[in-house]
Amino acid sequence: MKNWLYLILVLIMNFNLSGQEKLNYFVNGFPLDSINVEYVQINGITQFLSNKVKVELDFGQSTSWWKGTDIKITDSKGKSVVLNSMIDALNFMVENGYEYTNSYGLVKESQFYHYYLLRRIPKKAE
Figure 1 (tube, rainbow, N blue to C red):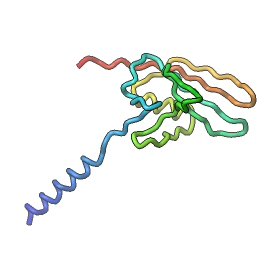
Figure 2 (cartoon, one colour):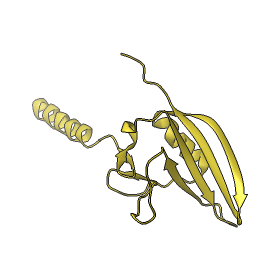
Figure 3 (tube, rainbow, N blue to C red):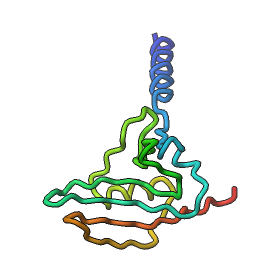
Figure 4 (cartoon, one colour):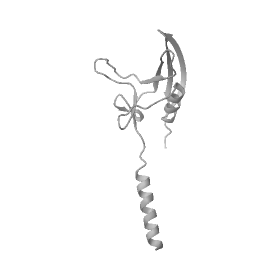
């Protein structure tokens, strides 16, 4: 009886561990963890009379309105990552290996534009 219990417990743990895969994030089709640049910029646009922020990530990639290139952050299933604020976006990027460097903002046509400059944290040699 104990052997069956141990076997079932081991099988449950095995299925549980295999189901917990690391989420990969993408920007314009590029995996976020393989973007080989030192600096990135988070662009946030707040609409007039709204608390929602549209967040985009600029790492110097080529973008084109005609080609429909997108600089939103997506997960491995292609769904846009919802970031509720610029601080949420900053925390997301810190979790993915970047550190805050500088920021500025400006107002243009009833919209507030946030710009955060981030630097990739160098990986330590193992």
